Length: 116
Image (cartoon, rainbow, N blue to C red; front, side, top):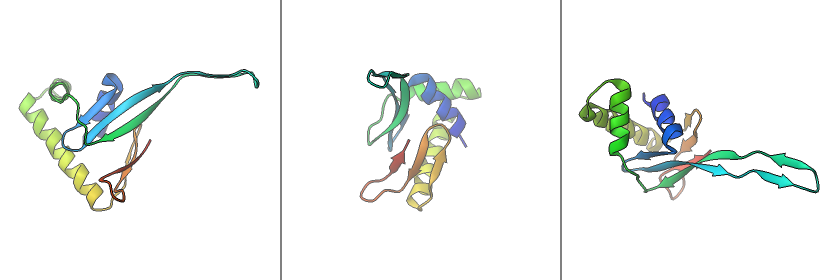
């Protein structure tokens, strides 16, 4: 499917909108200094899921189209098909292990339970 392509888009743009579902965002965490123990931890990154929020999707379609050498219309269709199957798998109780992003499954009271 499109997991690798969408993961690349997330890394490049720091967010990945999935229309009708929500938005993945990359959050940067600052470096930490622990003076008493003389330790420094470098900055880090984590992925957050913002259910129900959707960012700007035209850029995503254009990016998919350019990377796959297809039309914007075909890119939109491929993304909609991916989202349909993604949502269907979650609703059927499947757990999706998305490399580099996290684990997504059906949550209690929410559409998704996301673990980075």
